[in-house]
Length: 195
Image 1 (cartoon, rainbow, N blue to C red):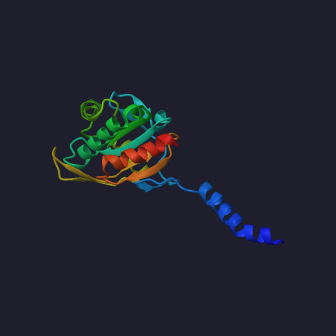
Image 2 (cartoon, helix red, strand yellow):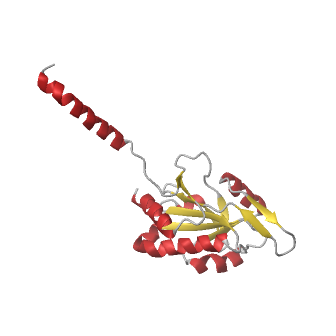
Image 3 (cartoon, rainbow, N blue to C red):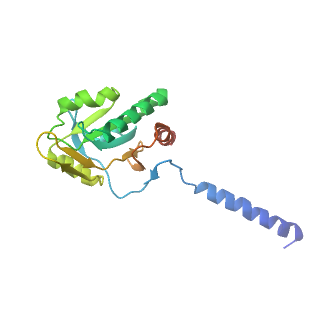
């Protein structure tokens, strides 16, 4: 090996390493990256117009999926308001996003009630419900924990407070913690829109 090649070798190794690691770089999300998660998937529930909807109906858009209930005193309205702020900040890109609110309280959250609650945050948001068995199956599918507290008409539900972001192909990508700022949600949604 001549002297020129010997001097060039370390630089060639650095360049090769840079090329290889750049090709393997991972998308950076503000929320928890759950790309490749072995849970989630398609489901069918009834929307707030009484129409059966599959999660797959929304492929082609980035989906923000949140599980809650309309009588929730804090977590649910805060999260829905955050996503409403995100939609405003996205401007024209909002057309590439669908927010879905899955009710964990099908006993009270009828399509009629959801049709008043969910679009009040943003007219494009969709509320979903079903039978208690259907809702429970979807909650388990997405590892959402919830439990009824109290008796009578004024019961509450303790429930998981995070939300999921799915990419345009319907794959789970990000778990957003409750209280994530709209700027955090917007950044992650923009990342998925741009993929």
